[in-house]
Image 1 (cartoon, helix red, strand yellow):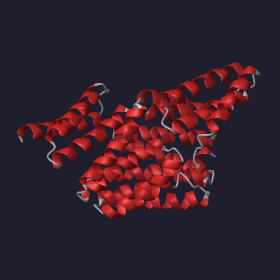
Image 2 (cartoon, rainbow, N blue to C red):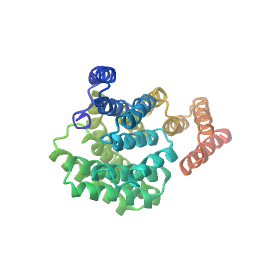
Image 3 (cartoon, rainbow, N blue to C red):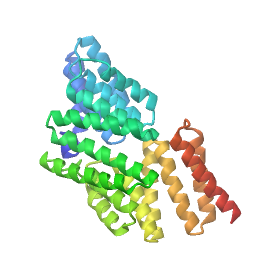
Image 4 (tube, rainbow, N blue to C red):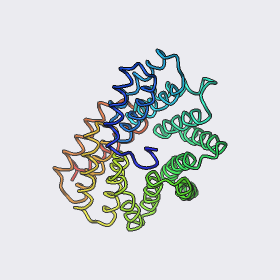
Length: 332
């Protein structure tokens, strides 16, 4: 319900009260309340609070000898770890779900989906696309339009990025089809919130094709809903991509404003691997506008953040890009 209607921040108080009361009464319903409040925190990007909310839920399952919400807790812990960039931990949670015969079809599907997201993060396209397709087929078996739409949205993102990296227009066309089908299925499910993720993703495809005005129109259609429903992570992505679109239109100040808004969110959430990407975009903007010192400061900050992260194909790529930009500044 939180995902379909947009998580209302006012629910936090009621859920916290429910957890406190059920804990006093030694009532296992505490587990369910922890799951809901943990998901609310996750949707708001409050990742450390999510983890702290969910871990006691696992302990409560053991104390109550119940598995009713156990697998959902594991999947949500996996998704939280993935958002924080802790991929090995993510896969360990997912394996617990996939290696057991107990979880429902829906919980198995979710574990496949999260495994696919880690593959996407790592640039392992076979794992990414195979896993999301497994999840999609399981949700098709359940005839669940809402979950099918979520998987189609993820698949669209994967195909789009794969198409961009390998300069394959066919994959980008397939990504567009996935997002369009996702919008239709979200509509069938009566969704008024998640539907704006594929709307945003269509904007990303238009941005890739350099249809800047069309991209901006999609982003501005999605942005108010992300703001109203506290979809902070999606809002950070949207601000960044609006910055890129306005660079394409050579509207430098507007681009800087949107990049800065994205930087502020990632700094507040404490997600350095996402922050680095936006700082790189902002540094690139300052190079274009001949603001050399601003560019150097911004890119040096990004490089310092990278030094604190574990090496991966993405961090190595970003490091090379940033070093090349700094060399470009020094040669100027």
